[in-house]
Structure formats: C-alpha cells, structure tokens
Image (cartoon, rainbow, N blue to C red):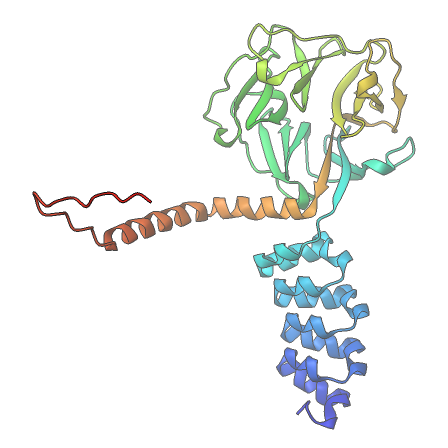
Length: 378
C-alpha cells in the first residue's frame, strides 16, 4: 500500500507501520520526521529507527521504545543515547548483542565514604572546595576499592561485599558476604585481594576468584606495623598506619618481615589515600579533617605541603576511570558465568572434539614386511 501515492497520507502510514514497523522505509520523507509515526513504527519493530530523521534518533522516548523492542536498535540511536546508562541497560536486557553498539567513553570519577557510611560520588574534573557529593549506595560501609567494573566494600560487619559499579545506586543491593575473617580495608591487584585483618591490623591475601566465607587468608604478608587502610597503585602498596602517616612497599615482594618505606609525608595526618593519573599521577588523601588533599606523586616528600581540594565529610576514597562499555561487558560476562554458560560451552567443545575424533577414519597400517617408500629429496 505504501508503494502508492498514499505513502504521504499520515493515517494510512500510521496503520501500516503499526502492523509492520519496517514499512516506515516506504513512507514519504516528511513523515520520517513525524514523531507519532516513528514512535508507532519502532514500537512494532525497533530497527525501524534506522529510517527516522536524526532529530528523532536523538529523542529519548523514541530511542527507549526502539531498544525495548530490540536491543539491536541501539546502533541507530544518536551518540548521546548510546552512552546513556538507562538506555543501554534497557537495550542489553532486550538483546545482549546491543553491547556492540554501546559507546565507549571514559569518565574520571571519585568515590568516597561519607560520614553517613554510604558511597558518595562526583566527577573528578569537577572536584573542588565547593562541589557537592551525590549519594550512590546503601550502607553502612567502612572502606571501598574498585577493580575493573566491580566495587568491593567492607561493611560494618567487617566482611567484604561487592556490586557492579555501573548499576550501583541507593536502592541496589550489595552481594555477600564474600569473606569470612573480619577485615578493616581491602585492595585488589594481580588477581589477589589484600585485606587488613581486624585481629592484628596486618596485611593478608587470598586469590580473588576463590574468595569465600570458608577460605582462609594467607599471611600475614606484612611486618608487625599496625595499619588502618591500604591501596595499590601499579606495583606499590600504600599503607596508612594507625599513626596517621603512610608508607609503601612492592606489593609483589611482600612477606611477613618485609618492611614499609616511610613515612612518606609528615605534614598531613591521613585516613585513606588513592593515586590516579598516567602522565602526571596525583596522590589524593583524606585528612583527619575529613577533607581531600592532593599533591603530585613525583613531588612526594615528607616535608611537602598538601593542597586542599574538596569540602569535608569524607572518611575514605577511591578514584577510577569508568568506561560504560567495559563495565557492561564485565557485567554480562559475570552473569554468563553465574549461569554456568562457560561450563556448558566448555562441555560442548569437549563433546565436539570427541565426536570429531571418533568419526575420523584411521589410516590403514602397512602390511608387515612391506617395503617402505624411499624419501625423495629435491
């Protein structure tokens, strides 16, 4: 019907696209920018979004309707919606193939634990003495660390919990407990999780993927100095002592008698530290005043003064580079493994190899005493 001159009749086109969304391709150009027509089309077939004018590909309601019908419609949405968390989550729930169209964009972010014991957040570039924090999680929490797309937290029961960073909000639930022994602070590096045990305030470790409430921590892997928090940057572990000063040592060379180098600063009593940056790494510290201070890591010296960079009400912090696409990929992989899909695929591959081997004809053995062919050389 839309191949006739009626393709510019709105009522006719609306009826057509309501039954077959893809028929929007035959509509007159003036109707490809008609919001009502395009919305009806994508509700029936999300991929019809490809025929809409650019302005409607940037319309949130239309994009949401399209990706709700099929996640693959995300490829036709404008760039800003391909990196919008809510739109991306709806698309992935509809079809995980939408991951291919998620826009990759890194966001420098800072997370802290407020005096109300929940995670607070703000973009790192906007951090200032007057910038505000936004609540980001449930509590009560004591410390946090981030590894990839996962945020790990020590709750008030001194056990470790986790959740996906990209979906964390004030209503989302923490998964756990994941560990047994009581710990004060945690950090992750090289496939290991490190924790300060509450019993002696020394560092212990265990394999991250094997961590359960039944597994024991290995260690101690640090000397007898008592610590209150730890963080890791590259190959160095930084430990804050109960004296409010911080120290460091190579995380991969730690043992029960390895010594801490420091103190690295004597001008600020700190509670927690985090290092961030590639070209010019900066060291951020929460002082005893619950405010964030910083200095360049290359300039670190016991007598150097710190620069104040935020208002107070923070007891711990961690800084990371969030990337929505990487986070979504990690989230889907975690869900895939939780459902045992990796084991099913492994079993299917093993079965295929066995079937192929059994079906392959064996080469006939040469009769006993038969002359072997002479090798020919060029």
